[in-house]
Image 1 (cartoon, rainbow, N blue to C red):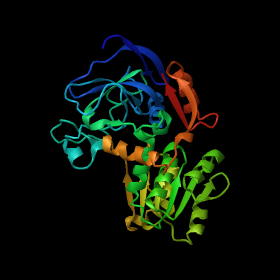
Image 2: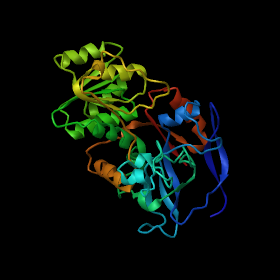
Image 3: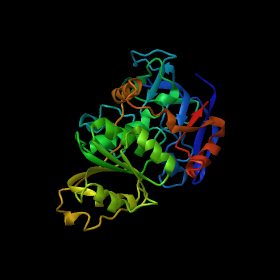
Length: 358
């Protein structure tokens, strides 16, 4: 397929702009998908601000919904025109890391097979989804057909936000009857709240400072919402738990303050599941860490990828266990994505997620 396409490319710190690029060729194991809907992620904003380095000219974005335009000769079981998604994490599934159960840390063909965040390729190491067309590598393992009856916006959170939020709940090792606190109710934190409910938590405490997000958290399963502008969150959680602390806490913002607060409300032996993308060094307070003797578990997560993960998430949507469509608060065309970035990066007008269509 020849011709040019529009794409949102990283130009320099503070500049992501629409450019024209050739429609890419594909290899034997790849698929070319025509993007119908994508979105902007907080990680894209880190790239825009120069806090996460990528190559100049790289197409940004890692949350694709679209239709198959062309298939490599080795890709079987799909057909052109079929509606699909692919996970933000797009592993090879043949590296040592993948076969060790760590597809997000996929090191590809390197001799040891591990690379931090190596499974995150779209908009990181290869051109991403904020474009008219996208190459999906290792397509046999990563293309997930969209069930009939589900709209683009219904499945738009599956490639990253839903998968990441659920991964935070899964990594927190939540048991039936647990008390769970979730710091920050942005898109990932909201999905973590929904995931904690599905995992069987009996009391979910959601923390944020925006009324609309706290209200949405209650819709998704939060039993108690705390506005950090109004109360001392640490004192309030310790009061709620009778001084015990929570069984698990999910940190979904990526700041020193939220990380430290999360640690301070954790019971001895509890798990801190960290989802935030940090842009500076963290320090661990000695008292909250019980001098290293509190049997605490701190675990970080990057959402797993692959078509089976995507199938499972879409199944949750299809069965109406969770409805994330209301998370899309604003809609823009690809041509207007610079305006969308300005809105999203400055968190104006109650924005949660922006749907970008072609």
